Length: 260
Image 1 (cartoon, rainbow, N blue to C red):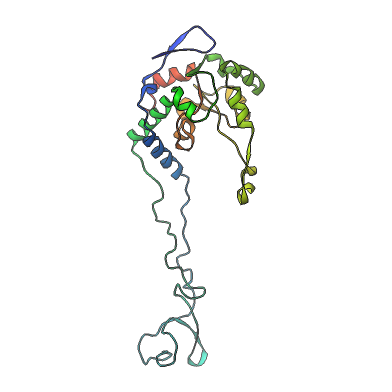
Image 2 (image 1 turned 180 degrees about the horizontal axis):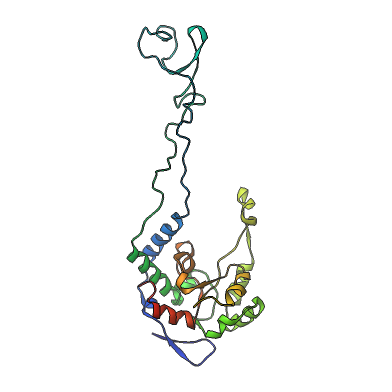
């Protein structure tokens, strides 16, 4: 399929990655796998609650046994002259061990097949040129797909970039992300206490001045096409992020056969 480059009379043919079937189930699964890679294993100390001198005497008439004394037969700490102290070790005791503590060997990462991941990436990429899906996600724009000429990668200042993006008619979407939402409860103490809405994604062909110019726009991101991941094109597992593809990025995707 061919689409017009914004601001110019030329057309560019998009590679077949943009023609993939829309599969929200695969996109969600790929995102969950991506998010699970950041989970940290949790576990308690192996001997927690067991570092004491408590002992249980099971034989009915053993030394220190509590049979016929009105006491439960459980592990108790040893005291001088054959006496018994506090109940320890068992989960129901004060300072006892936990019955089922978290274990570091628990499998907390979600694996996904490589072909399945690539299919999810292609599906999310194709959703960026589907006007209906992008509008459902809540972005403000005139029309898509948004294909920028090569000169966009040469912009080095944020104010120049904002001025250049005006021809794409995405100003309302950029303004919407500037209105940060304050977090509630204890969470307002985290990450500055605000939530920033995701806005435009700029995909470039390689390292360029645009990568520095775009990072100062709240909610925006600039990524190289070969380093894209599912969280870039479908944040939170929801496809349809407003994306501007540079001409060089489209050509590079076709040449390198990315995500095929």
